Image 1 (cartoon, rainbow, N blue to C red):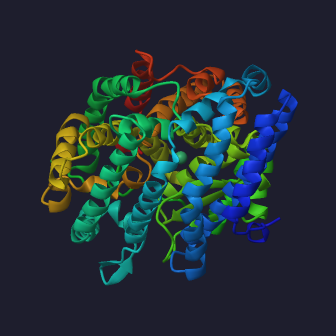
Image 2: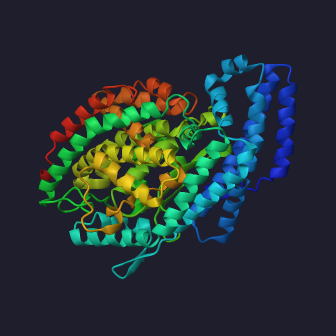
Image 3: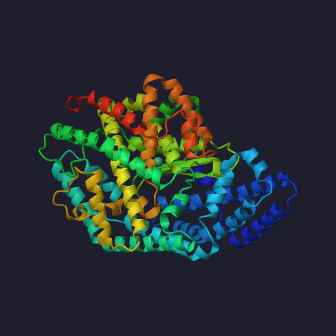
Length: 563
Ligand SMILES: [Zn+2]
């Protein structure tokens, strides 16, 4: 069945309430674990339908933000979110009191019950109205950024459309395109600050209402993290400062030589004098090549990608009215994922094809997991699938980049490593923000600059005012949309590098470990998944150091000016 043929409907909340209260009653009255299991599966089916329809509604809107009908459907699903959460919460409460908990854990493992415990700590009917308000504010941010219309050299672009100019080989074009981007942010900074200020205060209030000191603990639980906390994360950030920041400094100096510049500014993000590698061929060609690649990579990936193509489960190319960014979503009732991105002619198009396809492949691989909550893992684990897929597809990169393949590989590795301090900076910033909910927008910008001096000491914005005064974080949508979803990329990158290292010596074993990890989905927590994949846990002292040693050795062996 094609995406456009998937059944979609509006769920009627009042009807669902009645059905779920019936399930709650049957569950509470159950005389055996068997009866309770069938109640859980009944509820699981409702959860799958709800998740599928709301994903479709949200996706259709992302594909065309000017479509009024699509907006109405998304608005509808946004508006019922808190009521639906209340329904599921009523079930979780009785589940948490089940006398058959041991038997349930025997059937599905302890993860399911732990997830329920965590979820219970994130909701109470008394925060319902605040959750609706939070959703409205998040939507305001999307509307504002997705609707950006920026004039550049006589043409109009959205934020994603401006992207290719940021890595143009002409320094003047790069600089002016960034100025155009930051002018837009500067003109909208009051609105952006206003939205964020309200979000922070609201999230703090939600946390306090639920009995927490501030939003941090709640933020972690919303991310479903129940196997580590802020202390482990802080220790990981410290290791990034110690082990990665000095290597990035070396890469920075090397780049000065390659580009032949005395001083590198923020807008000198390119890696090679004649420009960064670009994929060769039109989007249709790239997709055909990707299909061949996935067929050759393995039987599993071949079957998966054929489905993505045949069932039209991808919308890849940038166009006016499309929400910026790339993501993978899913429709659990139909066992299908979907990939959304904004191809713009840069090498990023290929990384999106492999990154988001990694997510989608994992989702597809874990479709036989018994419970909906077991399909997707928590995000730091999910990003392992995507980032590792970027590496497993390396042997096919010559199909996309031809003579620029080695350039692509150098950029990929050095870029992935250089990303770690930025990721840690975004994470550290958010911890500070939610520890200081009364800070002013000015304080926040100052804090951002302070953190930049620790994590990104070489950054120099030259004379571009907006980032110089600390506002650049406003372009990082996670900070608005999904608080604390960012360190995930750095943890996952550390794992993905380990897969890459393994694939250099024993590709077959590395791939088998990867497929096993994908199939496990979210049936166990992050720390256990890392073990299942035969990887070392990034939090462990020394893990990152080992990875960074290997990666920087590899980089030392490449002379980028000869590529
Ligand atoms: Zn991802």
